[in-house]
Amino acid sequence: MKNVGIYLLIKKYRHYSFFTFHYSFSIMHIHIVSIFPDIFKSFIETSLIKKAQDKKILKFSFVNPRIFCPGRHQQVDDTIYGWGAGLLMKAKPAIDAVESIIKKIKKTKGRPETEGNPAQLDKGGNEGGFAIILPSPSKETFTQKTAHSLSNLKHIIFVCTRYEGIDFRFEQYMKKKYPKQFQKISLWQYITLGGEIPAMVIIEAIMRLIPWVIKEESSRQDESYSLAQNMNNLEYPQYTKPEEVLWMKVPKMLLSGHHAKIKERRDTKTKTLKKKK
Image (tube, rainbow, N blue to C red):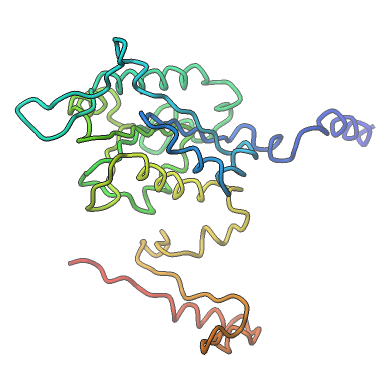
């Protein structure tokens, strides 16, 4: 009878793929607030990001803050008070866009997208397991440690600004209402035309840490900026076929098949970064 029960269960769910059946409750939902959502088109339709969506591991949605702007022209930016070059994005449309997303997140609580999720509460007490990320010049820079922390969440909202940035009252509002969820993050000390490209960089770094996005588990563990080494390492040099390119040959040790000595060589060739004083 036990075998019959298993047979009937398999027959009932035979049209489901393994990933859909097993991982339907562990999807990460990326929400993008941007006035130029088309910038993400090829990004989400290519390579492993596309495959992650097909496996129901990753999901994207977009909100254009223009839809929250009154008037026929739906003006999302304006001149800067106190004089200043360029235009600034308005605070209210972006606030409304984020709030509309959070409202939907709260509605999905208890549904398959979030049900049974161990990251319902993140380590910082972030109820609902979501974060609001504003890519912008900041004291806080994005690191591999940040990526690991964000990879445990179910929902991440990226607010991508343009022009000279966004009215400071957007940041004030988010810090006051969502102090545990809101983060203003910089990639490094340079300026881009908008927050879309920095958001893509952060998404890629987070996405590759989600189980089953990258097939080989070791690819996520044995790498540069490892948390096990306090992000203070650069991975050893690696080689592929052919054995010789121009005058450059693959080191003989890597062809020997001696795993212990190969590991020893890799450990030796792994660089340790100098700590800043």
